Length: 358
Ligand code: ZN
Ligand code: ZN
Image (cartoon, rainbow, N blue to C red; front, side, top):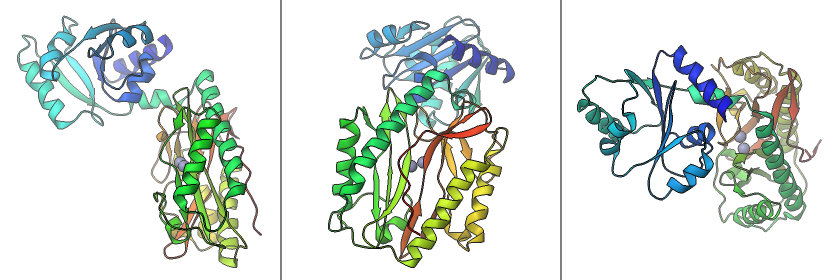
C-alpha cells in the first residue's frame, strides 16, 4: 500500500500540486485499501487522511492503516475546511473526471472562508496511470477472476439450445459465476442473439435464441475486488457462410493481435494491427469500437487500446483484446480475452475454448 502512496506522491511533485483530493471510488480503494462506498482521501507529501461518514469509520480504520480517519457529516462545504486543516496546501488537485459541478461549487465556497488562498487544480488520470500497471498480487486476483469466468462459460455453453431466451442464458451464467467462487458479476452479463448481437452492449432480453444465428456472450467475474472480461460468440446449430466468414475474420484479428502486440507499442498501434485484418476482409466499417481496455478494480480502466491512444503497453498491464464485426439486421461476432504483458509479450489469462466454425 505504501508503494502506491509513494508513487502518487511522485505524481504530485510532477504536477506541481501540494496535495490531491481523491473522490473516485476505485482510486480511493486502490490508494487506501478502504472499499466502502463513500469517502475522500486527502494526500499531501506528509499526510494521508481518509474522510468518511459514521457508517464507515470503523471499517476505514481497519482497512486503511496508513491513513488517519476523519469522521465527516453534511456536504463538502461543512467538512472540507476541517479536512484541509493546517496542511499548508496552496495548490490542491481534485479529480476533474469525478467531482460533480455541485461538489466543486461546495469546495469553492468552503475555500472562501479560509484565511490562506487555496487554488483548486483539475487533475486527470494520475491514479489511473498507477493502477494500469499491476502488482503481482493484483495479477493473481485477476487470474483467478478469469479462471472463474472460464469455468462459468464452459459450464453453461454446452447447455445453450435453440428455444432458450437470452435472459435465461444470462441467469445460468450468473449463477455459475457465483457457484464457482465469484463475489459477483463484474458487470451486467451480455447475451445477445441474432440481430441483437449487432449491438455491442445489448441487454439480455426475452428474445428466443434460434438455430444458425450468432449469440454473443460477454461476461466477467469479480474476485477479491478485481474484474475479468471475456467474450465468446457461438452458433447454435449449423453456421451459415456469413457466420463462418465473419467469425473466422474476427478470430484471425483477435489471435493476430495477441501475437503481434509487444512491449512499448502504443494502444493505437495495437488497435491498428488488429483493425487491418478486419479492413482487409472488407468489414472495416463494421468494427466501430476500440480493440481493448485495461482491467483491474474496474472492468474498464487504463490503458485504452484504440485509435488515438498514445499509452504505451508495458509489463504488468492487464487489458482486453476484443475485436468485433457488427452487421445491422444480421448480428455480430466479438471474441475477447483478458491478457497481461509479461517480458514484453502478451500472455492470455482467459482460457475458455474458442470454437472454430470453418
Ligand atoms: Zn467484455
Ligand atoms: Zn471488454
